[in-house]
Image (tube, rainbow over all chains, first blue to last red):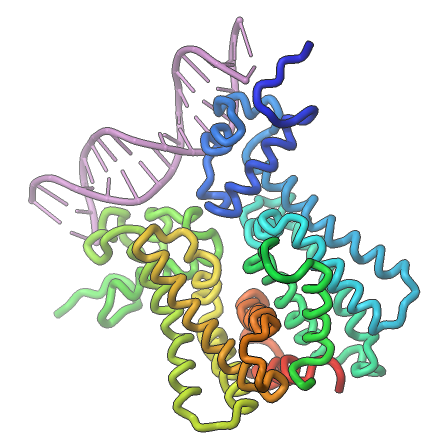
Length: 198
Length: 198
DNA sequence: CCTACCGATCGGTAGG
DNA sequence: CCTACCGATCGGTAGG
């Protein structure tokens, strides 16, 4: 007969700590959040956290790398589909918005707090993000407007512009908005492909 | 015969402190930067900073509000020009990139660290940013593709998408890139207005 | 997961 | 702008 302290977790204390940390990190930042804040949110005393995590940075590293990993899965899904380049781009955008909509706070942490990782983790996070950017650059290079100009430096800027729009979504997305994640994805995909000239 | 300790400032010690803080805040975040870090970067002892500033938050408040103010000046310039809506949008984008290019680190702080202001300052910063977003929404609503649909909720998303692209630029902009700020502004303006269908 | 605690460091100040 | 210092709080640990 196991005693369950709070209403929550059936299994994993570590997950509870990570979820509370996402909320706190997204609001107060990594360095603005103390282990005492996290402990209080979880409902244990500060020292007790160390039974489930190695240290403060362990928490951030987990959130960031698992977060970017969600985006990298998009890559596999899109590559696997043998769609036309135009459809691939649209598909990738829609999936990206889905990932953001599933946990906007988590993605806010992923996009803003990775800087505070120290060295083995930081470089790993940067590499993962670069892999994701590469996927978008590749998809863009396949669009008919860029055909035959694979090394065009404009593609890089185009890529930053598209990713900028997408990476900014956690900043304003609300589940209470008038559109579903998929509708949002369609609108943003329209915007990216057609611009304002419609 | 005034003694000048370092090579720098002819006048303003406060400016020196603010500039050093921009660099440190953009790299380590507000909460990851200590008064001792700032003092060391400026070349004085920690306690000496308080002769020029009221406290740590005073520094951030100055950087953030003066930074957003630079963007708000764009508004006046664009409104003053009696250009066509399409030209207004292009003009605003070009000016936005100019502001970012002038000090990308400062704008990184403006976009990411305003959250850590406490209450009178934080609300002021949010209001200023909303005023700027409103300008873009207004300009977008005037574009011919939105004519007669001023309340279209799509305009809001379109606005977030455009501002997302623009607000992300401090993340990747480098003065060593192949394009000048104005060329970059033109490319991004093309991307926003025409999308990828060219 | 708690008790009890550590050394280090924080933002800031008094008085010059 | 320096000397000297403060109380508070930090991330983390030993031992149970």
